[in-house]
Length: 448
Ligand code: ATP
Ligand code: MG
Image (cartoon, rainbow, N blue to C red; front, side, top):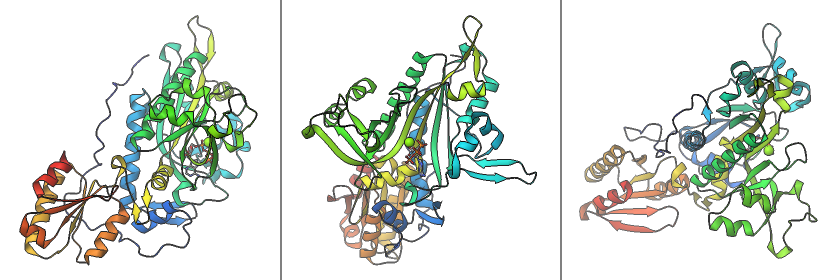
């Protein structure tokens, strides 16, 4: 297997760095609902101050949105590393000639953003990376003993979508995790595929999502070894059909590739009411789904065209078997909000929340309140708890509404009466449950 990286157990999702001073979030939240936003996640991302559109389908990630994007990225990365994939970073700009080797430069069509440099060389902004990774593999791996390999990166892609919409859900520039596997034979490719399949289930679960793997068999070479992972949401772009047995198995934690290959679960394009494993109507669920991941075995399609060959055990050249595995990292931000919100705002699952705790000072400027808040803020941040401190000089109603909109899992409310009585209020954003307790017990609960 060659030089494999040490497998690291998943680490806690602490943020890329705590804020060491109380901050006022940039920018402020919006009261009005932006008219261009048609679905909840887009509306809430704009209102909470997570993103701003730069041009059609292209977004700036504001501080709050970026924290979520980074947390999702971290979970994706940890699960890829755990599955034995190695991270590298390929560029966004690629050469047209490389894409001519696979024949895709002409085939790709208008979704590809084509660029010409000052020397009139044709370049492109990568919509995906099969060609580039195949080139890297072909130039650097020559022996079968160096297989298997799964390589991945988390990089911005550009696809000139006809109808960019729903905010980051269907952008033109978007962040994708794409992995590529290289194996000596089909059996090996299947093992890599299974490793990614399992990693995907874990990845989405850690984000608090149920993502159902749907058979995305194109009928082409590779048989059933392609799945799209869909998060169920009314606003999903795809219709999905699946056997209720899926829910039953999932509840028992018994979903794996084998179990799934027997179950009927497809998107509407693939729906075939006459297929052998379609359940009776009362056991067939129909829903809408957001595609958050897609895994795909494609055999020697690129390795053959581009000469990715290793010396096999008996010295004869073997064209390697490949697969590719994508996750829509930026789309996931929207998908998670679609699955977790109410009429007041977002309700972040703790693992991807931009901050775990929102600390509300009900009377900024009041000496005792300020001192109590600052003490709690210091203790939380020292314990590594991401905390957003609202010390604005504003009405309590505004602060509560903003905190509900931003949707942090816990709200800790400090007011003058409570401070005098030695009491704070702790609210769980998800259940809405509130409790009054001493500052120390609240801290103990949050730091856990
Ligand atoms: P779709 O069917 O939604 O157009 P796709 O099949 O073209 O997606 P893939 O090539 O499989 O997408 O890309 C891998 C993942 O990247 C997808 O599962 C999706 O989560 C994400 N993705 C694809 N296109 C976009 C986009 N325009 N904006 C945001 N995320 C995207
Ligand atoms: Mg797809």
